[in-house]
Length: 237
Image 1 (cartoon, rainbow, N blue to C red):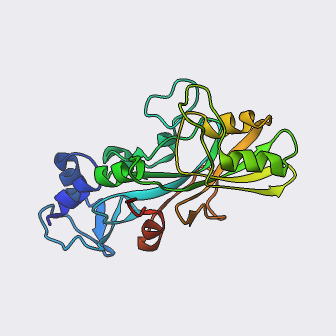
Image 2: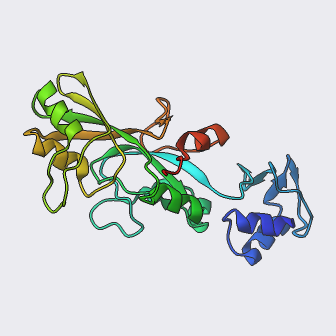
């Protein structure tokens, strides 16, 4: 693939802009400056630098973000900054989207991609991808509340009771709640239905992928093959 096409596919601007950067010596491939835009490279695993920043070619972008509080999962935020302001320009240029949304005061693991099929698969109701939330509650937790969450609670405007896949008390005011749905304010509404209140909410796992302890709030990371396997759901019969 020609170098200018590689840069264009990775979100570094139009082919004209990419061609100009290459001709001005702003691009290096495998540590050596390449100033000819039409040089052919095998893109697979190609490592290149643009204006001193190192990138690896990826046909599709799959990444995780540790969402901080007071950020909105929207390209057009209304009251708080957008999570997309935390990403570098090339990822925005290639059109990464968040897979589902977290409320502005909810923190934790968020996946993003520019792969439409992957986004659809992870979002489709045909796939039940478990998501684990660490819930900090206002009132102490007890087994009666856990039993209700597991058997199903009735939420306003929902035709049938909504149940958690798992609910485990890990502290007097801390619950690990596993859901396979993504209804509006679901965790907050479920806790309200058992006479409690959510004080803080953090998503700590999607599928079998845990939020890394060393991924700081606001930081992002590429998903490697093992991480993708951990989040890729098995289709339900």
